[in-house]
Image 1: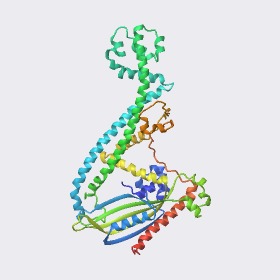
Image 2: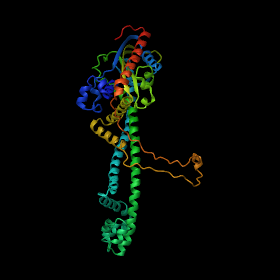
Image 3: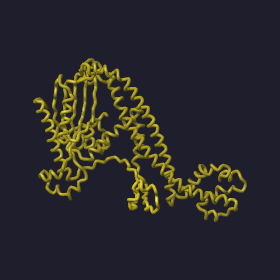
Image 4: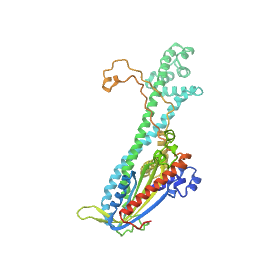
Length: 488
């Protein structure tokens, strides 16, 4: 992923957390259209500490801050974890021997991914065909288009269903048997049995036509139901295959990324990563959040007292979180421990603490963007072409977010009969409560609504202040615990 978590936060809320937010909104219109790579991130407040020791390792620094965040009530998640080794280092040389294994594993996963992708492509094509077929049934219920739709279905029935009868099919009899030349026209002109009796036909033709009309009308009802069931099943299967694609993307990415990191090309632009040196670069990002308790702060008079009332609290549509983003950038010297087979890293660590105030919608939007990156990453790794993969992504999103045109409500009547298997599932304990039909929940893009007046003037500013205090506490506690007077 090219964009950092700081840039994604700036994309989600460009007015507060992007230095160039106004320019981007003016250029792209909405935050949804803003490319995260173009964001110049900023936070409410930032503090940085620098820890430089060739003998001390990164692990104690990282886990001290992680445990400190957990102990102070933060719910912490890791959003990035990257490393790069200099080609001339012993660490790189040892990893090079594992490169072929990683590539082989990646190749196997990508082969499975390609199989899933082909399945997704076939499903999208099938769903297109189903939509076209179902549109005819929808037109049948419209007075203006019902006649044309019925004629279209009759042609389909004669070609696909009735034709299986061979010489006794309508077309075979009309084109090959004497006395049945009017059979096709009569079938197309008749909608029901009454219409057959009204048409001036000989009895031989009527005897053939009557059962065919009845068969066709029954076929319309059953075929529509079966086609809609198949359409919903295909959409469910598409959802499953899209999820599988994301899983394969997560599985393949570490191997592909590791194999890519072992290549020497493209590393010369990093000044700290000299090819002949024994150097490693590590990047880690943690995001911790605590929920802003509006009621408690109102009782403490940090908010208006009426904010503590249940009537007001029910009007709040979303939670606000006091967030601290901790970004580790480490430049170290890998040293292999004797007789243990693994490395320790001593060097310089730049740790930045950033404070944010994010609401529930913004947190969900950030996670949504990261999940989309997973799927896009899988598609781009397989094809290598962005445009065609974006079109496929649009197809997947279209069918998975499609709303049902009709909601079918079914009520199950109380079963008065004696079913010997009903007691096995506790059926005799209910009182005939109607069962609700399961309706698949459509996938919709998360829309981050603008702050209300209360959120903008009271809740967001308070959350920012709390985030700044908590962020500084983390920074200050670590600095004092390790006797670090030098910081920025």
